[in-house]
Image (cartoon, rainbow, N blue to C red; front, side, top):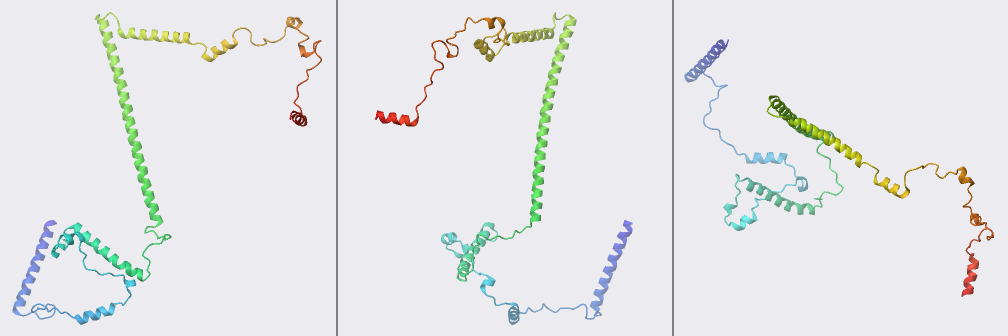
Amino acid sequence: MERRGSASDSSDSEDSSLSDSELQEAFARGELKPGLNVVLEGRPKQSNDVDGLKQCLADFKHQLAWVERLDVTLDPIPNAVESVSHSDPNKDAVDPENDFQREMSFYRQAQAAVLEALPRLRKLHVPTRRPDDYFAEMAKSDQQMQKIRQKLKSKQEAMEKSEKAKQLRAMRKYGKKVQTEILQKRQKEKKKMLNAVKKYQKGLSDKLDFLDEEQTSSQGNKKGGANQRMKKGPNAKRRYKNQKFGFGGKKKGSKWNTKDSFNDVSSFRSKVAHNKGPGKGGKKALNKRPGKRARQKMKSRAG
């Protein structure tokens, strides 16, 4: 199929080349008539119709006030530092290949235009400053801003998830590291114990070290527990109360009367009991404070 396609393409190119050669022969014999093909004799003359251009300009030009147009035309503004340092005017020309010079020329041109336009606007009483209570409509709608917020929020959540995943991976690595260290330690202890058992079986050693270590550790634990039990006793608060109030003996009902205590009246004193002895005339008169009027009389007498 590919060979047939290539053959058909070559035949088409041959037909086109033959047709072109036939057209050239017919043109040389003068058989081609003017119509589709036009022979140009020389280059066309360029016309500069100044009056027509001015007429077209007057047709679409509108004589509007400057406030409506706000156009300012100025000559190129030279740099003040360069104009002072270089007296040659040709050196003030901006190099278009130098980005910094080109942008600075735009900046100076715009600055000069603003300095010329501001006084004209003030003369026409056109405000040039934005009022304090001016609220402009945002370029983006609330829906667009909501989408941006959602996108930022999703990015932040994704970053937080990735940070949490990193922390979990680090914790897992640390946990695995600790676990491997413990397993290695156990394997070393097991290997050491097996070597000791083999030496004991072969008669190279008289005792097993790991059994002695276990016995000493168990005895130490027992002694420590006994010492703790011996040392354990009443705390400081209990000891203070025992020292202050005593301890031991019967506590409950210690002040209850018995038959013997009820019949024993040897410690009874009638003179002391209720202030009703033979030498007492009833209750003692209480020293009461004199009233206000009595105090005033006493003051007047003393004065």
